[in-house]
Image (cartoon, rainbow, N blue to C red; front, side):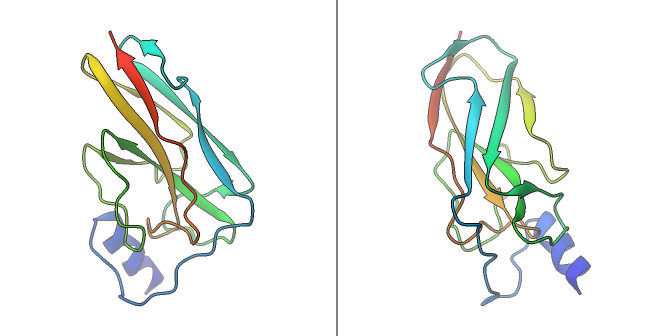
Length: 137
């Protein structure tokens, strides 16, 4: 059953309503190492993720005090009680990746990280980075 729920979540299908959220470890923090807030960069842009107080585990792997990254690009945070959507504004790193190189068009862009549990649902309380703004030349 756990594998089925994980597959449904990876496909962006909402899972069992009323399921208990995965607790976040006390003091856990996620942040963007690079680029810096306010940076002027060229595309492609390499975004490096930082994490303190919890571990990284691939999607579908239910291990306490772990999760995986989701990068939110030019968008507000999604609902924090549902699986993170999977589209061009919500990039999933279900393999446990901690960086990505993106082709972004010229202009201002916002970037924010959100940790998700094994089913892509944000932890409780959510482990979310500050939103940064970069300018692509």
